Length: 386
Image (tube, rainbow, N blue to C red; front, side, top):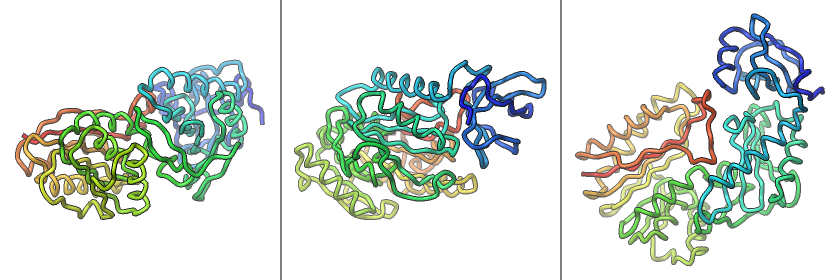
């Protein structure tokens, strides 16, 4: 396979696709005559002008766009190395506090659509969302080795259109089953081989910090808690009591262990294995954290997801005391910001007056390309009951 970008074969694309490339969208859809998967290609509009360059893919997304205009006169693997290095350098500048776990590479947000790389101390974990990168994984791994901090690297599977299987495999070194990372000074147990996403929810790091800052003296309930990151932040922030709720017993066990790692007595708090959708607290809460998993995988499921968010907040809003807070979040990419905030508002408004205190998305280590609105999946808000 020829990997020289400037001499890559030319593929003519329709006007609407050329316009999308010009706007900076990293994906092209449609049926195009393309070389083998992973081949670099130059993209030509109907007038014969080169409008961008990318990698041939297969499936609904047929091209992963790497850039606009003429490609640089370098090899694809050199471009890969440069962009990985730049992404790593950027994170070291924007991730604050005593922290050693963050997203190093966020696909299109770092100019490499379909590739994700996370750091857990000295363990690198990748997830590949495009078959176009399969022929170039060895070059990618060499780029990661060149960063200097990774003693081992793991690839997580679970992307049906790419690997079609679950589990993980070591790519270099000996990735451990568990690793203890530091996030804004608090210690967290991560399971890179089996944990959610690539080990844990790195995108909620700054929101956990916020919860820690507002939890003092409050009785807190954390629903859909997974390994208790929000719970831990609240307890370290001085919450009077933290109730951690998740349907998975193993997740609750890890949440307890996270408390111990930070010299907090788990028995001073409450841990419940329960369905958060059906759970109700005993007594009023000063802070309710609602962070369910994705509730819609397809466009058709948007209506059901909206209804679920509305019902969830309607059923629990009355359990929050006056001047109490709800920290609500959604990782449902199929649900846009307006639809989600409307569902939250409609649910909580059944319990009197509320105000929006804080609204945010993913942190700086999860950048989203300007021309890629689909990249905005995480939504977070803090609301106060008046």
